[in-house]
Amino acid sequence: MTRKDSIAAGFDSARNYEQAARIQRIAATELARRIAAGMRLHAPRRILEIGCGTGFLTRELRRLFPHAHITATDIAPGMLQRLAHRMPDDGQLVLRRMDGEAPDLTGPFDLICSSLAMQWFADRKAALAALAGLLAPGGHMALATLCAGSFRQWRAAYRAVDRTCPMADYPPCATLQAEWPDCGAGLWDEAELIDTPASPLAFVRELRAIGATHTDSPHTAGLRRVMAAAGAGDAPFAVSYHVAYGQFHRAPWPGVFVTGTDTDVGKTVASAALVRAWNAAYWKPLQSGTDDAPSDSTSLRHLTGLDATRLYPPAASFGASLSPEDAARQAHARIDPARIALPHHDPSAGPVVVEGAGGVFVPIAPDYLMIDLMARLALPVVLVARSTLGTINHTLLSLAALRARGLHVAGVILNGPPESVGRDAIMRHGQVRILAQFPPMTPMGPEAVAQLATLLPPWRDIMQS
Image (cartoon, rainbow, N blue to C red):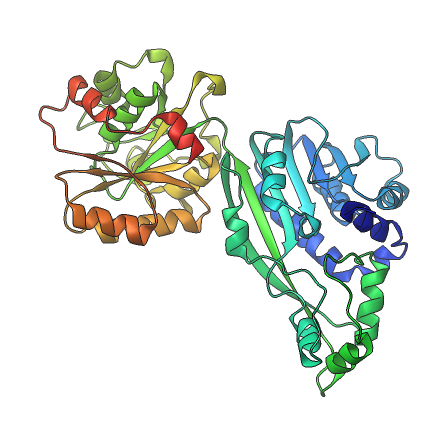
């Protein structure tokens, strides 16, 4: 019997799963809440669920998205039969036996989700990449899985009697974070759930009742001693489940988001050089300051000679040289982030260079900052910084903010006189690649941009990294 057959057989036999799976029900309900919050503006039309079990999450998905087509999959045929019994008249539900690590269907799906199935995967990173490939551009993945710290009381009982616990070693969130695919941006966080079985023996019986019987480690003798150790003491017996919740957003098209450590740090020149080096399209979502100078889109077209069909118009433009939020207010307007429409770009036409306004925390609207738009687009980020004194602090703070939102940083472009000490400090402490160091060039025109473009790595290098 293969490992996958063993896992499937355990869950096939779990006839009392619904009654015993308390933690699984709680985790699925919480994951559904997070899905609802993350997709409140755009309800998914096609959903793929991995490891549906008896349908804790499936039923929540149907409640949230009554018109969606749901493909619910599981490795265990018995689980699919139990779900079919609980949702017998759902014409928009398809049940399919499938190994979530080796999806054998075609997308695209607007939402791919899974609750407490991924801990059974042998190769999470490869599985996530395969699933992300089934997402539609702009699609979401929402996942829950066990992570480090789970069952610590039970593991302690094994140590107390000098036995090896056969339970798997689950990864910390930092490991999960590093396994996200490179076609978007994702973030994990964890929560601790405490279960209080009636006794250690009840805990063992409930694991069997939910079908969680497979282990990759050999069983060891002495279970009675383990249970005695787990039940010793005056405190009630409890078991901790550390559940990691992950949300991933696939980018709508290939490209990068150019942001800066400050305003007037050289983002437009850097964007022009990237456009020239990669033969990319360009989009400035929000433009302000046109009363004082030509728009960045106009400047970029002058610097690159970019064809007008590859220069996408801003979603909003304002005259005052202020943050988008304040510039809009001065124009007696208000930016609605939900109405920032993405340009219709063909992914096969190459990358898009998206240029932000100011830095990562520049306000766009009440409770909405530039970094929120960056997270929505889920593109790798190019951070533009000055090369002079003070850049280390500004650059490291910006990098920390970007990574705290799960955004991948493609690299940093330094503008100004070469300064090796600051450059090396940013690379060392920021754990980031310096894409290029742009020296001062006068005059700044098309010829200068063409020279700067030669300093940048090719697009295929960015994609591979």
